Image (cartoon, rainbow, N blue to C red; front, side, top):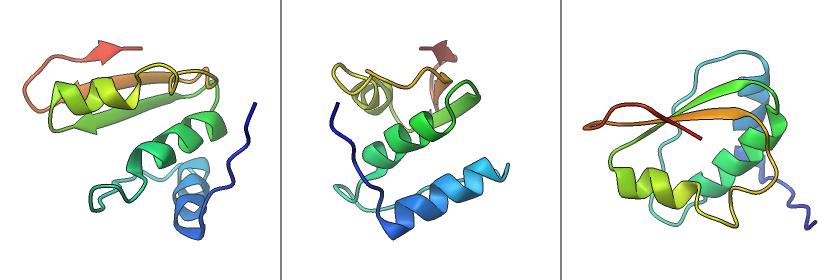
Amino acid sequence: MHVVRPTDEQQAVIDAARAGQSLRVAAFAGAGKTATLLLLARALEGRRVLYLSFTRALADEAFAPPKRRGPSCRIRRLTSRSRTTST
């Protein structure tokens, strides 16, 4: 499996989550938010995570194969217009 090293910003998000802090990650398109989410899911393996997205398409894209491989944390997706869905 290919191992990706987080950037300093991504590592700060991971460290904050491991410390039990609630997080909101906002950045421009292409900045690595989905990659950060996947790194975070691996770092929090076995824990529950809530992923909020503006649209279902964004939520679905974040967990589309092959991205969904690996982490076994329970991620709950929620969009502003839908009910909660689990992955």
